[in-house]
Image (cartoon, rainbow, N blue to C red; front, side, top):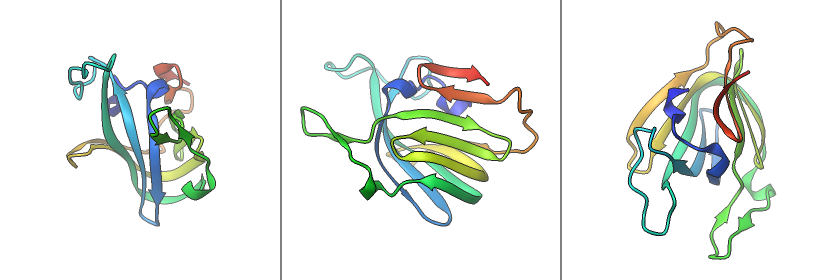
Length: 149
């Protein structure tokens, strides 16, 4: 998925999430590398660019497997910041998307995924289509920016 090019899911932090009948939103702090069009020079105390953004799923038929945020214990860092781990995988399936992390095993039927940075500029979207062959699905997994399933 081109919208996630240069984003290291292994070093991404889930800051929270919400859902309703029309939208699922993950608030994240993304680790962004130079091959991403969203890369900025790192701050002096950072080894790469970190930017807050949102991953949004919209226009879906249904979803399941997402835990309520209040039922998940967050990690508290030394500096007092709270996060809910990372996104272990984000996969396009024949039915839509599968997203796995501390928040659950989310399955989104149909719909599209969008990446939005805090200044609310829509960057791109990837629609879920049933025409993707099951042997050639793009897969984002922990430890590799893009692998083929």
